[in-house]
Length: 303
Ligand SMILES: Cc1ncc(COP(=O)(O)OP(=O)(O)O)c(N)n1
Ligand SMILES: Cc1nc(C(=O)O)sc1CCOP(=O)(O)O
Ligand SMILES: [Mg+2]
Image 1 (cartoon, rainbow, N blue to C red):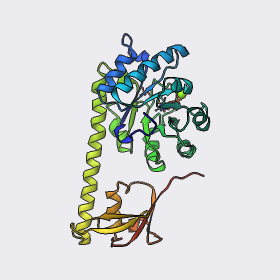
Image 2: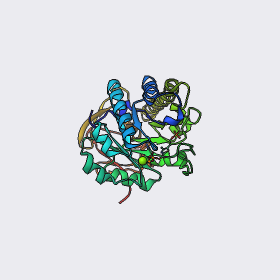
Image 3: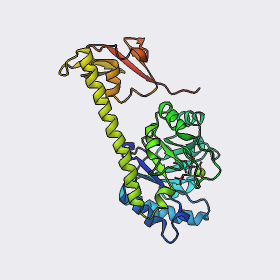
Image 4: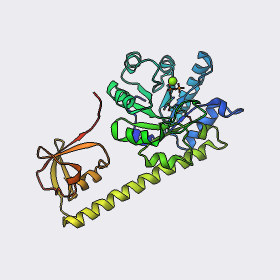
């Protein structure tokens, strides 16, 4: 599996914590998470010797291949290479993304922890494949680390285009707040691997994510229907536009409606129609017509 993984399938990322499940092996617990629907696994072993980490990495590589999910090694790019993992996860104080890329090549994923908007923007600019956004809540897995709150989750959702996973103190009790803030992917450790039934916790977190998807789809569909009604644009009329240089057919009546259809309405972006920027406040009144040239420019931020 190369780094060109299907991020649509990765909603729940689970990290090992062997101290959280005394008497049960890391591979058995992680297999339970895969049975529950985990879409990506990470080996995180902060206390073992290199040979112990290598042995666990080998076992998890075999397991994740069986389930067809990406496998990431925390802290050890060399072990990631040795076991042919899908990538490595770096912290802010670890080697740079550039150094890791030189070591691992283009085919491996590089993820990095971020704790503020500046980290997120820099990570994207430096070529990270995904970022961790956290710790959202205080957590004993990372004691003493200040929580960034759901405010940073919302910020990350509008600032970066690469996938991000919210992490830190996430449980089935608070996941809804994290998802409402804009997280499409969750990452959890103790709430899952420390539970009596890791598969059940995974299923519950995934259920919350997919319920939020359904709610968003239905609210977008309602917005589209409402706007068609208010603009008098008949549903069966197709409009052919140029959208970022490609021909695009839509039944949306307005620019606002089109952005909802594209799932872009809540993103930070600039919309241009026939070369002129249309401020967000005028999206609803901007009606679409055949031949309009629409450019959507994603705001990335930073220098
Ligand atoms: C997905 C994800 N996000 C954040 C971290 C934390 O990594 P790091 O900051 O390097 O801290 P340690 O995990 O090494 O203590 C992570 N591992 N995974
Ligand atoms: C390992 C780690 N890194 C974090 C970060 O924000 O960078 S939070 C975290 C711990 C996540 O574990 P739990 O789900 O048990 O809170
Ligand atoms: Mg680390």
